[in-house]
Amino acid sequence: MSEPRTARMLRVDQAGEYGATRIYAGQLAVMGTRAPHSAEVAGMAAQEADHRRRFDALIAKRGVRPTALQPLWSVAGFALGAATALIGPEAAMACTAAIETEIDKHYTAQLDDLADGSDPELAGMIAEFRDDEREHLSAAMNAGAERAPAYPLLSGAIRLGCRMAIRLSERI
Image (cartoon, rainbow, N blue to C red; front, side, top):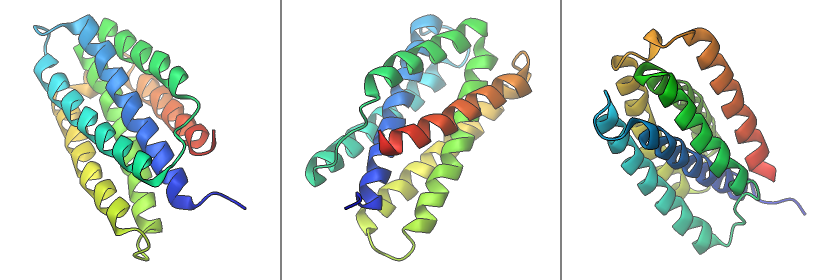
């Protein structure tokens, strides 16, 4: 018997929010509190931590197995955050913009899948979090994401990595 689609959604979404907290932790470890955009990054990190906490609670409530890849996402997320912050503030914002572009698409597809009303609790959380992620994307673009060195290449590579992480975390 296959696993319910909502369990896979919950697993991947919790993994994504966990990864986001690790990316921001890496960025803040490099940027500190005085770098350009560090206050914005800290605010986005706090929102992602709340998203994760709420997905953690729903996973526990429903008995859904989290991804086995969480240790990998911890290291990879922190490394991605630190590396982009080392490149510069605009690269850190380019990282946010790339990831939030993919997460907006991901959450929108999930909401389309849940449009049948089968899980209003999960759909409500995803809709709320998608709106937050769209705000993060807008803030990143306004903060100069497109001015990052080699922006198209950086953005494309991060978006590809994000899509791969989504596919892996749904099942593993």
